[in-house]
Image (cartoon, rainbow, N blue to C red):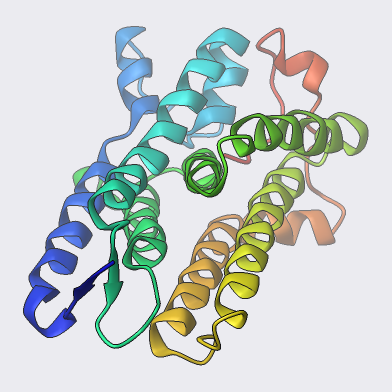
Length: 248
């Protein structure tokens, strides 16, 4: 493993933050809506995200939007993984790519939720967050590609189908995957006594920040949910492009 000295490489982190934020600002829902001569902010819930696209244009369009947003969250993280996987922070055993994957992902999500290109009126970050964890967990083990897909299909979609609480199902999916990744890091760095290292603490703070952002973006949904006023999300209706609740 090569050593990376942050004081000599800080500009890479600044560059990653700026580039990933700008990537996050690119909204596929807006692009898809424009191809259909619509304004994503003026149809359905007004939220430029996967669920709104599904409700308004059907399951196929919603799936395309989800995959695009998932790749937006995951691809920058994967690129940073391949760039820094052979490096550790100087004087530690902390793998640089463990930090940069979620550092890149965090700024993509920030750009998605608060895009400067759309007057800071973006989506809610669920699809991009799920894609981020999907790609990052797949770095740990290629079998995770299939395992995460099964978790999302039968966990998140199954939960929404049974309870019809779309926003909560999506949020639990993000939180569940972040706990999974957190446990991987916990066992990795507890084995070599690096749990109290600043970079490891930073990794856990990134995971926490990703959860905070997605839950914060859904604060209005959560208020309605706890007040018993949240609209139900019918998976059956969504499959036919009918209206449901807003959650992505």
